[in-house]
Image (tube, rainbow, N blue to C red; front, top):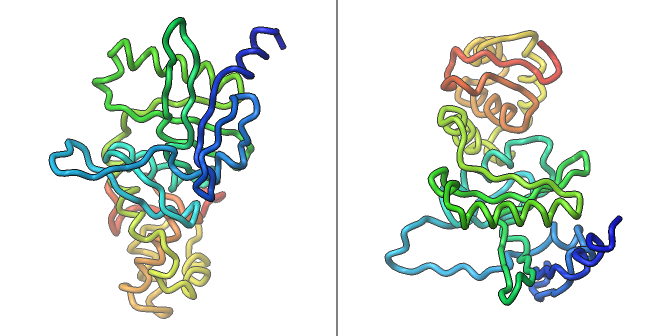
Length: 248
């Protein structure tokens, strides 16, 4: 490790808000990852008349808690992260980084922080595609990528995804809470799925177990939870083929 690298890890400031609500000031090299993954949003959110963007709170099935978002685009990214079985933690506005740059101090609060089941960590900034050509935005992203890379973390900039896939995930998110479906039917319905069957086909096979209006929500919950899979590039419907994860 170079001296410059070590000095930078010891000089780049990191500010976050602990799970208990206290603000913590430290440096990049000493910032506690477990504390960051349990942190509250480092920025205060304010709602006022005339705002040009939409913010709110999303209940995450991954964390079992609410995640704040500042725009509909951020909400879309959180939905996809919550749907990803490899994601273990989602934190919004996790910390502020700051560094002396000549006579000025650069500051930035990334939008989100992810932890993954394989131990990886991803820092995410969400911006509309039209903003990516802005040299100021590009400079901030490049700087952030460089800094978090020194901690061995990944950096992702996100501007949207396929609208059909997003619409499907948004629909499935309505079934993310286990208590909204007949949980006792999950295993019996899952056992009916051999190879590739349509959603309607499974409902027909499950007619002796429960009514279709009970089976359909269970199938959608199993798709959300990753126990079943389907092609999300096409609109979901009764003809959509589904299969158990790990099977063709």
